[in-house]
Image (tube, rainbow, N blue to C red; front, side, top):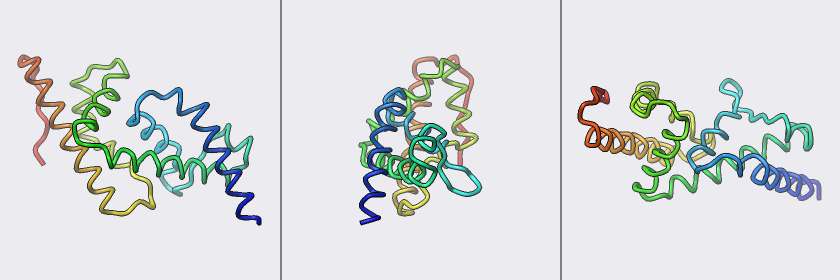
Length: 156
């Protein structure tokens, strides 16, 4: 009985998160970045002040983890052209210089923190590999549109 009641609270918190927060974050990749950023890098515990206030830290953390895992699964299943489009939309959404953002993402490998901790390793590696390919595709497109740009993706 207790587990089903707790699960109902987690589901309610997921709906709350999707309806109030994630609906304001445009694009699957942007939502993934947001959810990954709610996870503490030292403990792996998710935090969201609003959800914690309403549901408590344990339920809020589980809801964030569940939404993160579900969204990651959607992105892993995307065909490469769709992933390229999602990443392009994310990188252009900030209004900063696209070439700079592209190089920063490649150099810092920011995308490495996006997989959920409990996802299968093969899924995480597949996703990270696809993101690297997507970055290379976006780089190639940028070079074709603006051959005068002097930026290079480092070879790894």
